[in-house]
Every structure is written in C-alpha cells, then in structure tokens.
Length: 270
Image (cartoon, rainbow, N blue to C red; front, side, top):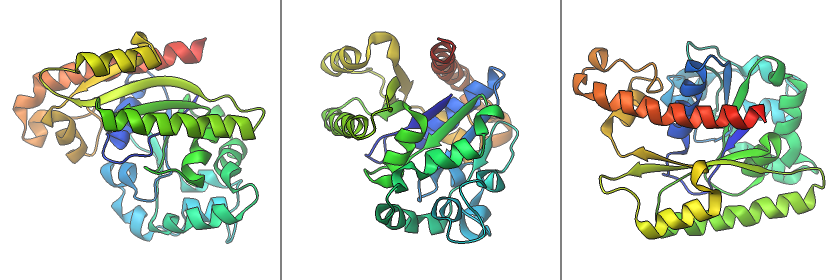
C-alpha cells in the first residue's frame, strides 16, 4: 500500500507523522519505505542522512528527469536501508525538479512511473511518500503515485482552509485522470495541547473525515526528542538520549501511532 503524507502548508508535522507511522508499521511487522519527495529533505535530515542530502552522487532528480545516467527504472539505486525502515532520500538538487516536471507533458506522473517500474510494492508492505508543503507537480505526483493520503494538520481554522484547498486539488486531479481515485486514509491532528481540540474543530474534523479516521497526537517534547535521536518514537531510547523522564510519554505516543498504524493496516486489508 502506498500512502502520501500530504499537506500544502508547512509546519503541521508532516515529516514527523511520516517517520512515526513508518516506525509504527515496522513495529507491527511490516517492511516500510519512505520516499522523501520534499526538496527541503525533512525526512532525510531527521533520519540522519545529511551527507546523502548534500553530496550523494544520484538523487530523485536524476530518476524523475531521466537527464543523466539514471532513468525511471532506477529508483532502487537511491534507497538506503535502515533498522526501522528504508528511505529514498531527498537531495538539494531536487529543488530543480519542480521546474523540470512543469515542462514535461507527463511530469506529474513521473513518481508513479518510477515506483511502478522499481517494483517497490513487491519489496515493501507500505510506501510512505513525504510530499512538499506546497501545490505543484511534486505534490500532485505524490497524490497520483499513492492514491491514498493522510492529512497531518493542526486543529485550527487556518488548517481547515488549507485542507479545503487540498480537497479541491484532489478533485482536479481526479477529473483530469479518469482512472485515479484518491482515498482518504486519516487526518492526524498534531501538537494537540493539554485542553485537547476545541469542540468546534473536533466537530468539523470528525464530520469531514469520520470519527474513526481522526487521530490526535499530543504536544509533547518527547516527539521532538525522538527526532533528535534520529528515530521514530518506537526506536527512541530516552535513557540513552538523556531524557529519562520521557519514558511514560513515549509509551503513550507509541499507543497513539500504533493505533494509526492498525487503522492503516485495516484499510489495506479491505
């Protein structure tokens, strides 16, 4: 199953959701690949692949543009293996991808073709695509490649407006591509404070997505401490990291992300 972690607004926990869902799915016994399609490289940098982001010989740009030695058949050449999950990292050169894909007739379909030709679905149970925080050919391409999307968000009015814009973009893609049907997997409300989500916003999110499709992640420092540790919360060792007091919070976070992973597994089994 392929899932796009998509939101055209930055700062809503998109990469954090990607990493921790990957960790949760791995903890449940699945093989997981993260494709970092965001030129800013959040998932790449936060999982400790800084050198690859800056100096790797090849990048997603080379695969999707087919302007060098790599082609759409060669996505596997980019993949780095890890203890929790594998990753096709981002690269600084990927900032050139948006402009290139705009100019290509089927540029928006390039990522889907690369995943298809790389036969990643036979190697991995789940492919999570961390897409850019903007509308454009890379973000659209992630939606087309996955046809399943998780919406990370904050529970506020600005996020509501951003989601409605993204819903319109999805409708546009489905109108343009007759065989595409993009399904909602979940909404993940990040950085939820002590008082929870306001009644108004809770009603909107649950009315829009369905109560069983909305997941809340608390605004706890342990989330960022795990990222500092270069892992998901599932592989995070608070004692080793110097944050022993995170232990109880990590257990609760694992339960929250584990529930999201179980929800995803349930949908993929349908």
